[in-house]
Image (tube, rainbow, N blue to C red):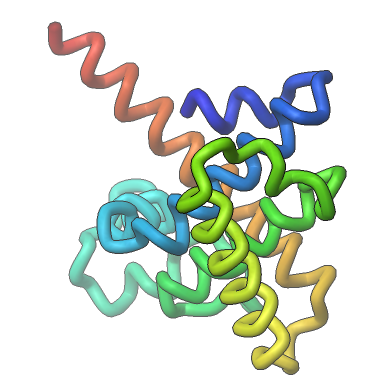
Length: 149
């Protein structure tokens, strides 16, 4: 949530680093987020293992069904949001973070290029939709947690 709020920063370096770190979370640490993305992309009140829940999620018809592809498009959207794509790597002080960012960037671009049926601009639009749903779900989770305390 903090990184998503930092995307609203007027400071370019803060904005770009937040987008880059979110990209890395979605790709490098995907196994920790995949259930949250699935949950965020389900229709309200849908049963998680119901076949009909897949068709009643309120997402556009051209949204990929595979959760990892949704995550890929979301990471692509975040990469698209980076203002200074050339120098964002300089925001990472630790060399391993720089390498990880470069790896994730290459992974995102290579894999998105292989999905030729969906235009690049549409991949970013679909990623934005998923990103908004993830943020909404996280806000609801935080509110629910704080109400239960």
